[in-house]
Amino acid sequence: MNKEAKKSGEEAYVRKVFYSAEDSCWVAIAPELPGCSALGATDEKALKELDTAISLHLRIRQESGLSIPKPLYGQNLRGRFLLRLPKALQRSLKEEAAEEGVSVNQYALFLIATARGQLHPVRA
Image (cartoon, rainbow, N blue to C red):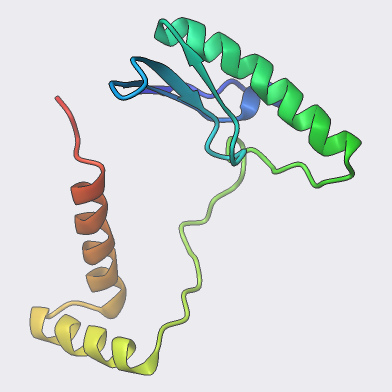
């Protein structure tokens, strides 16, 4: 379950929460801040604990002179990224795209979306 990102400072970081049967509790994470997570008996408690964890995480990074990751919220994403491929893989993708009658970009997007759907199925 995604909680809507808030809009400023520490509150701009994405928060996700899920139930962990293994831990028998709710887990909240801030994916943009590696290792920043919190636990709670309810999803609300886990998210409240995560707010504290985010504050501490950022304070420690600042005090240690480490860079502070920019929140994804508010970034102007253009829908493009550069990906370097081995020549053999590029050739294979071009051949498969030609067989499907689509561009390499369209075919790569199809493959990424298909793989993502398998890893993160949409739940009703």
